[in-house]
Length: 198
Picture (cartoon, rainbow, N blue to C red):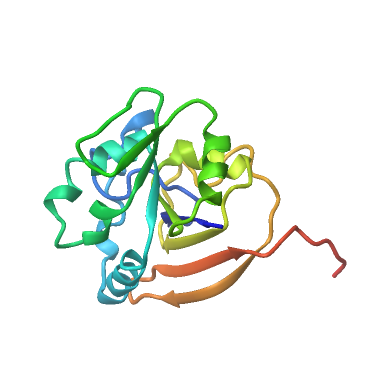
């Protein structure tokens, strides 16, 4: 079975909105687009490259797909795998793209994603895609989180964990602290939440 791995840039207060640039996602009046820019360092870059070079397909929301669609075909030297990966896109408005291979999902996204997980192939990576994430979280479809946690608070914006998060336990399987203060950590599912006494 394929796993769904969420890869996100995350502020200390849980915001994932528009990490890459000022115009990336200004919905809700978000004014801090590009907030990861000053935290780049060689250790973080190496961790990202290692992750980006693993086998994967993509599971994306329409907005993230449309940000990436004109960019990555022109930057294949930076991330060759993104162009050859199958891109499963949750969208009620799109049905096709010149950026191939791309398959568009609409209607009952949770059921379709659960079926895709059962198919042979590499793990499904989710980048950005805040609205899609909430559906995946609510339907318990996520197997792991690969997070880059930045030493910054943003006060408001789209959060990784919004309403509808189900209780679940995770274990840390890998972590490192970058010179810039970014913590890179991999969490994998570890069953249900266990209760006990202190």
